Image 1 (cartoon, rainbow, N blue to C red):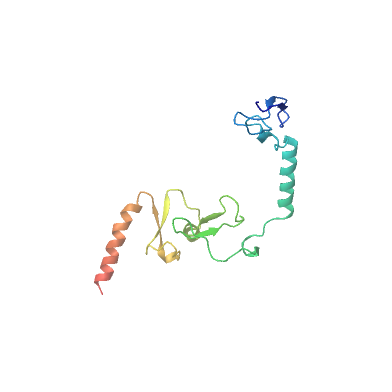
Image 2: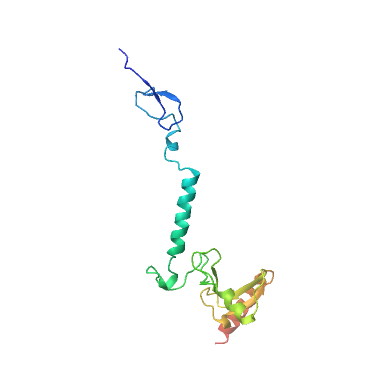
Length: 161
């Protein structure tokens, strides 16, 4: 004798009817794909939760850098190996808060912002040495020609010893 398979209403509240057991004999409460509907919040609830979260972060701002218990000191390094420095007026989590330190050093030397086509070259090749004497301003077009000239100067300095 076949097992009875009663018809039930989908538990998501859509009103559709389904058999209690699927074709493999397992019991079910939802039509396929309707189970995710149960935990959905209404738009009012989502907005209320978002507003509560905004209020929380406004009233409890995250401590910046050295005020944070997680601050380890030091300076962040980019994936290319350049030192990053937090820009004035920015906090660490903001987009664009960090800038390449060698560019900031060059801007302070020139007392003007660098243009997009201007590059700052490290003369000794050490990307972490941002001393003003080690930095050379060049353009994107002139940068490839700079390397052979500097290599020639290094060879001359090495042969004179």
